[in-house]
Image 1 (cartoon, rainbow, N blue to C red):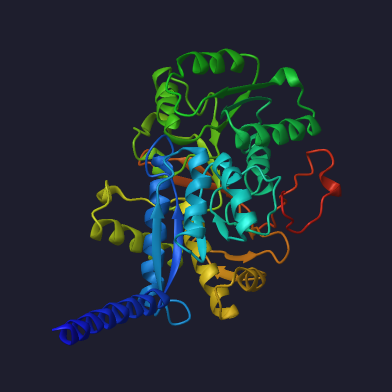
Image 2: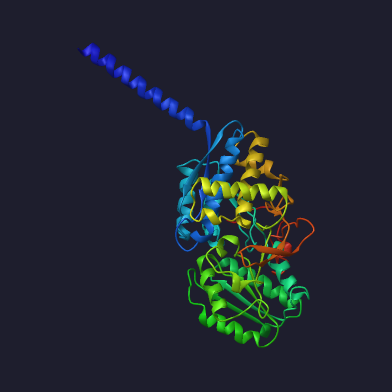
Length: 421
């Protein structure tokens, strides 16, 4: 009896060991990829689509054989618009889930929250949203715009005859690092163009703010002093009540144009855009750009949204941070193929100078030293169908200036990535 029991026990142990080995082999056959976006809370309106775009891109790469012969496996977490939770979830992805790379964050405060974690653990983060600059980490690749690839050209356009020859500027933002730093840069830029402080108004609201009645009334009052434009760095779901209040008070783009840096096709899906026609947004991509690469990109997204039964799939749209997510994942995959490894140091080296034919219609290049993409700049006008008509764009991609020349002392900072702590 004892001998038979021992044989059974040995057989069972061997089976469990074999299963464990099989699981280890199976796990080694995939490359884990982290997705760190808010799927709940105030930023979910903007970030959920980036998670879905990341999953679509991963499926696309896997359908073509994966990376270095291995399939990509997405690990999705929800930091829930909670900034300290971003750091916690980022650490979890790197230490517990053992992901090779993370694609995520929207707000600069979420990126600033995770940055020390990625630098400490030598993780790799791809950040897909326009931001204020003033950062260049060896552990982050920035696929969104720096201020000279969005904010500065947008204000130059507003100053031009074509853009309405604005003389006064109402800077309205959500109260955190990106709007405040961007507006610091813009105030200095406006001063350099001869605009006095009395012609610049600066107002901030908290995340999730919903009552814009007084603010819009103040915009109307301020605009009585001369040709005025609003520069909006309002983020997340607060954009919906802000734009609704503009419509309620009859503030039209022909009177006071609003140029937004965080409003795209996705944010406009929940708004009646007819009263907003003519207002502007500055990005590096719009769904409406007409070229074969973008047609394929938009068609693929709409088909994916329908196949996965995503909310509002019948009205699925693409936008700039979605394109930046798509480009970033493909560039990382190309770098891994070139490095023949997911080792962060090797991939970082392989990313320098990577190019990708983007849906924007331009070939984008990852700068060899500053970890930012060379990107075109586009200004779009809101149409009544929630799309944008591109009214101005650069001839080609522009090299990013992460250290803005409009902040004192930046000319002494290095033009290559260095750890922030």
